Figure 1 (tube, helix red, strand yellow):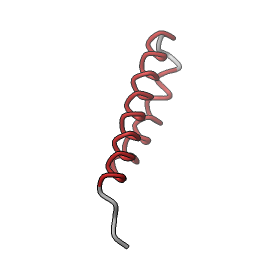
Figure 2: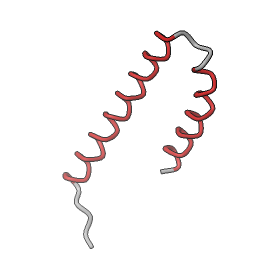
Figure 3: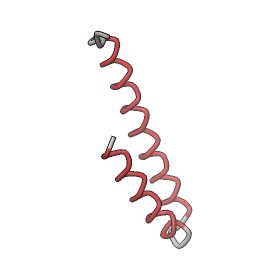
Length: 55
């Protein structure tokens, strides 16, 4: 969870830089971030199905 918060803080700092970056770079960075988040979501979903928590 702390890693996600740090990533969001970094993203907030980078958003100011995106305004000065070329459009192709901004789109490429957006695609990389989207893929990273997709992989993270798939790993989380797969991990929870594989190891259900006992309550």
